[in-house]
Length: 268
Image (cartoon, rainbow, N blue to C red; front, side):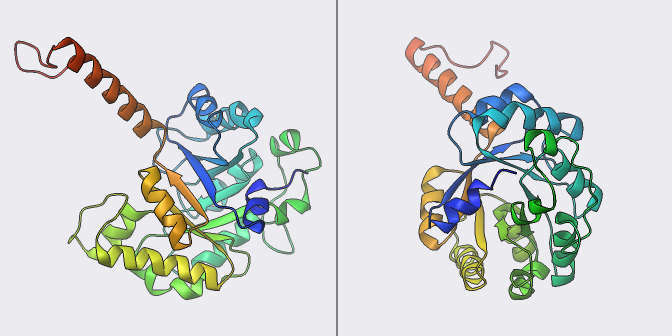
């Protein structure tokens, strides 16, 4: 079975750049994976897709050599095991609030005696010949800290045996800890949020696990690497498509002098 390239990079002290796919389309996924990301994650939680799109997206991205992961919709053994069986080498699990929930999640990731994963890697064994119990050592279990309870129990969660890292979603983290005082968004600039995000990175380092952060820009992601994060996600397919299209449209309108409104005042 193939080894997990992210583990190799981290062992060498190298940071990881993660891509993000929210559009349920193999061609879009293939384009993303071909751009040179170290890893690419399929968003089964908030993405416009489900398992029927996830499997062909994994197939389309296989040739890229990137480590392929999935964010599952919830801490549910069916979602976790199905994504692993499809060939995901890492799972990001949302809304982990306690050590008990982290232990449950980790148990779904690995075969006995280390967990309770059921054996049946239908596609994984085709994509990775020799796939078996040694997958226990290669798959990554990343828990999302997004709530006030998750922050309160951060140290206990980070110390969970078998947990490989913590993935921070700044939007939900802000909603969960600021109680409406701040709007949800990426790339937080508020001192209290930066302090919290840096604290999560420090706790991960103290427990020997990876600290991962979802970012909106490469500049913020590079700053986060300086804070001690081991993996940063920079934007995602839908945002990148919108930004590139807006830039192209804006350039055309600026060069031609034609405004982007109809006679009735609507926007194209």
